[in-house]
Length: 396
Image (cartoon, rainbow, N blue to C red; front, side, top):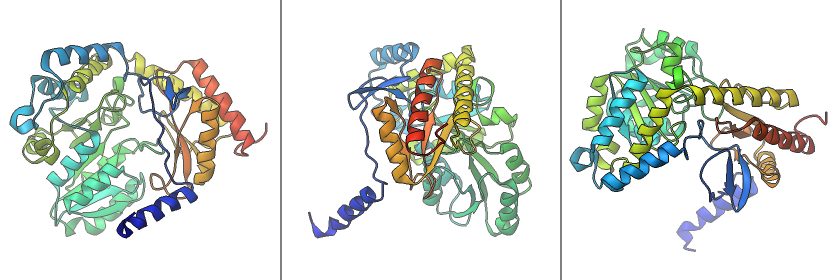
């Protein structure tokens, strides 16, 4: 290996020695309550497939029909020759679903943040960001060139403190929070954040990646959950979780959306969402608009699983959503727990630094509407057995 790359080998070895090396497993089946992972059939407690839509027959058939009509890829960026009527339909449908005037789609939720934030703030501007915001928000803030001011996690009083101290130092200001925090499962107090922000002439943006399809009426998200329609300037979301497909969306004020069509760099310089993805997203909207059954089942499953985990003695942190972190502390323990679960037929990956702070390693269990109660009971039995073996919970 060239000497100039030797540092990478050393860093990789250090990750392995400290239990932070991520060994990526391979799936050979559709997403669902059960998966085939590394050749083994296992119970799926890992995916963000909240509503079980990733392999839903309506989505699969819609994608297939779209491919037959339009082909596969758009072969261009949206601003030149890549905007198909399906893209327009999806944006109109998403705006209606989110109860906002306008929406624009991107290739992913990550790209939506990278496109949105730098287009709205830059040098001389201030970005007031929750200290636990997602990596895509952090990267979007860095790309913007604006000054990042962090406030304590989900703390409107601390947000008000930093706004009071430094808002007047900036030309423009933006306050950004995740709606649901993906590693902890707790929900931003968006109503209280809005009450603070409106006093300081700042744009309010929420990344609702884990709220869409989960919170609000029929999964319409955190803004709907708090009844803040027309008050939150920007809702960023993803179509890769509850929607079961891939893509990103920015919804809200029509002026913002129009500006992003002119200056959102992933929109301008990266090819559009593919045809089958767009068609599948439209099919997911069909299902969400027809019934709340899947969202209701998701929450029923989540409440049952969490209650049983608490009864067993596991620490599930501050989660108030179907995301269930099983707090274990150190990365080697989390990785060992994950391996033993896999041997027992349960797929739940360890999460450690840098995804979460050092000393706060965990398993992040993702309950879905696709799980039957028998699936949850089987998973709980495995957690109980291994938890007692490793000394995480009492022998009981």
